[in-house]
Length: 127
Picture 1 (cartoon, one colour):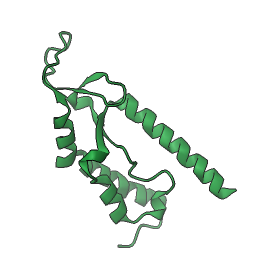
Picture 2 (cartoon, rainbow, N blue to C red; picture 1 turned 180 degrees about the vertical axis):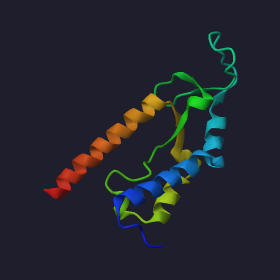
Picture 3 (cartoon, rainbow, N blue to C red; picture 1 turned 90 degrees about the vertical axis):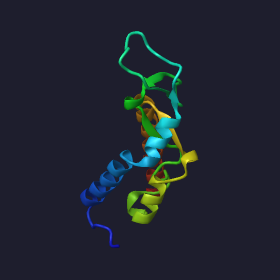
């Protein structure tokens, strides 16, 4: 399969793959396995399913949790342009051991650190 020539189309495809993953059985399975049945918050009585963030340890409602790939979808030493779509899809639907439940703030911090490392490596390659 030929990859699109421009970055906008590549990013649209990457986003579509992530949206499909967000509705996948694998993601649901990881989140279901992390539900803590013994926890309840008296200030939020309507929330019945709680998960513990693997980053900060804070309890969050299951519907607010995200699933993080321990090994990033796009390795920090690569770019989307250097990968085939098969690699992107295989990295997205990876082994369950590579996935962990994480709250949104922790996920943002981890992604920010990975992107910072990508930029640093890209600068080093350019020198």
